[in-house]
Amino acid sequence: MRILHVINGLGQGGAERQLGNLLRAAPESGAVFALKEPGVMAGDIRAHGVPVYTGGLRNPLSPGWIAALRRAVAAYQPDGVMGWMYHGNLAASLTRRLGHRGPVFWNVRHSIHDLAHEKRGTRWVIRTGAWLSRYPARIVYNSATAAAQHEALGFSAARRVVLPNGFDLERFRPDPEALGGLRAQLGIGAQPWLLGMVGRAHPMKNHVGLVAALAHLVRAGMDVHCVMVGTRVSADDHPLTQAIRQHGMNRHITLLPSTPEPEALYPGLDLLVLPSRWGEGFPNVVGEAMACGVPAVVTDIGDAATVVGETGFVSASPEPADLAAAIGQAADQGRERLRELGGAARARMQAHYALEAVSARYQALFLGARADTAPVSP
Image 1 (cartoon, rainbow, N blue to C red):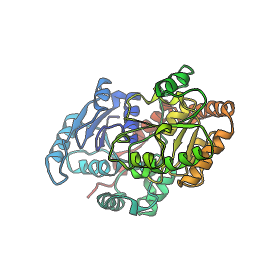
Image 2: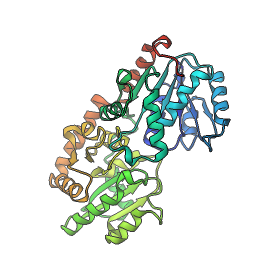
Image 3: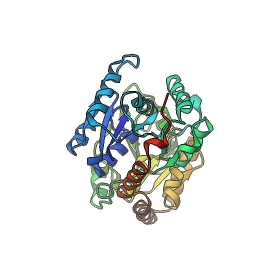
Image 4: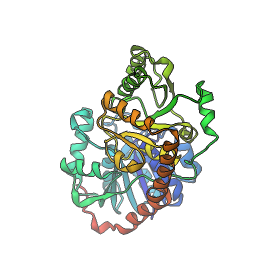
């Protein structure tokens, strides 16, 4: 079944990476329409033979992207269309007015702890989505928490399907040789606890809260170093760099730009930390680190706690004191125990979140939906 995936762009965000994973698993059955310019992942997706169309969207009021979407539908002739994230979902529904007669699917990748945290425009799109949610054939969520939250806001419960993220376990795998290599790269010895945080610079990711938590641990005598990797984390004007200076943590934190090869980073860590305050559905970085045999410390946002299960640690809240307590609890286990937990984390990924199995569930979803089961959108 040929599916046209409609998404905002193809940067290195979690939703974009998951779409890329699914397309690599079944390249013959998918194409992408990026509302904006495609982004850095477009080349890799095209390299697998997957068509990538673009709307060149800059101004939402400009009709140019609609004409481009119409041309993509006509050129690809999809059997179904799947939107990704809020804007992509609305655009996917529009294809029923642009010549597409098959089913439309939505894919929600975000949890909503508090609607007030979202931008005004995003709040409008979410509310519009709630009103239109009776029209897609299915609404896919990557976390049960996100499904419940959206349904409380008016999204159709009858359309719900929860499909977890899937991970390439050949790409993300333990690498014993990475243990010393990353430390050498960072210029630290074998003794400090080496933590990693991977995520773009955004208040929901809570970089500043993690800095405060690390400062608390250092004052308590813990020898710790944290590498933070992501878009704009090293920007001089970002509150993160200000927080590092204010807490005197320059020697304990390394900031690195986003990387297309996070699999080279994870195996060298003692722990991954996800300190997010809101917005996570199924955080990719947690699954990637677990697949590499690295246990995680997470906040109970989205399905993060469910993903780590008994193989990781859950902070009581995103506040610095609770984050510090969870990290300290993990370190108290000792490195040998953390390696055992890392092995259990890898096994958990193999049992529940392998890309091939998740891809098969998507294909079954597409094949099981029929155009006559979905009302035509207005």
